[in-house]
Length: 407
Image 1: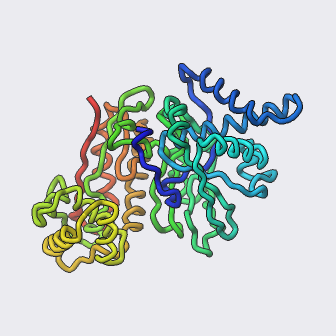
Image 2: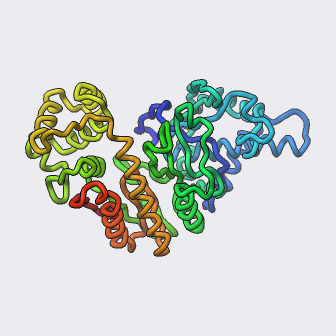
Image 3: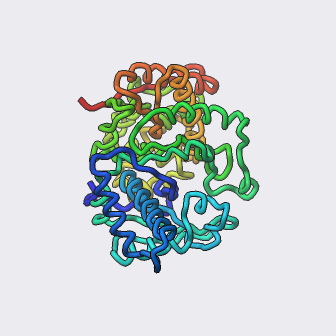
C-alpha cells in the first residue's frame, strides 16, 4: 500500500493534517518504536548533558514521529509552521510542547535523510505560514505497523467547529459553547471519548468560508485506505468488527429533494442514468459529483476527463441522459457546498441518535461506521434522519442505504 499510493495534493484541506498532541496506544512492538525515536533523537542531541534539554529534544522527536505515523495511516501531509512567532508562549504549538528551534532540528534531520518531501506553505493574512511535509515510502515503511494505534485524547477538549479559508467578516469568528451548533457536537464527543477506534480523535465539523457552507463532519478515521486496500473496514470499534452503512448517491438525492424532484430508481439513483446514457456507473457517479461542484458543463467536462478519464463524448451522453430524466434542472450550479451542509446536518442527527441509544457511530463522508451488530440500527437511523431533514424541502423525498462489511 505504501509503495503504490499516490502523493495527494498538499493544497487541498482534506489532504492536510495539523501537527497534534498524539499518544500511542498499547502495541506489542512499542519498545521498538521508542528505540527508533531515541536513536533519531541522538542525531540532534543538544550540547551538554542537562536532562531537561535531552528530554525536550526527545519529546520533539516523539511528537513529530507520532504525527507522521498518523499521516502514514491517513495518507495526508503534515502541516508544521516555519515561523518562530508561531511558537511563542501561549500559542497552540507551544501548548503541545514544541519550540521553534527544536522543531526545525527534527525537520532538518528528516530532510537530510531524505525521509520527507517539503512544500512551502502559503502566507495568509492574520494566519501562520504552515509548511507541509510528506513522509517518504522508506520512512512510512518504518511507521506503518503503528498507524492504527495513534490516539489524540486532548482533541476532545479542543475546538470542535472550524472555518477553512474564512471570508474577511468571519476571520475571527468562534462558536460559543452554548451555541446551538456547538452543543450537539460537544454531546457527541463527550460520548465518543469513552470509546476506542483506529486513529482516535475528536469528531469535528468543518465549514468553508462562512459558518453556513459545507459543514462536513471530520475525523481522521475516515481517511484510512478503503478502496484498493481494505484497511478501514478491517479495523475495530471497542475491539469489535465494524460495518459501514452508506447513503446511495447522497448528493444527487439531496440536490433533487432540494429542488422538489422525485428520484428515479429505487435502490441506486445512478443506474437509470447509466441505462439511459449507455455509460458505466462509476463514470456517472464522477460526472454527477463533479457537476454539482461546478458552474458549467464545460468545467465539469474538463475535470472528469482529467481526473476520472471520462471522455468528452461520454460527458455529453451523461448530460443528455440527465436532461431527459430530470428536465429543466441545472446540475452545474455549484450546489456541492449546500449538499455538504445538509449532509452534515443529517449525519449529526444520526450520531446524536447513537448517543441516545448508547451506540458509537463514526462519520465517513456520506456514511457511518458502527460495530457489526449495530448495522441494522444504523440503517434505520440514517433513513429516518435523512427523511427528517430533507422532507422540509420535498415531502416525498427518499433515500437508499446499503451496508458493507467483511466476512
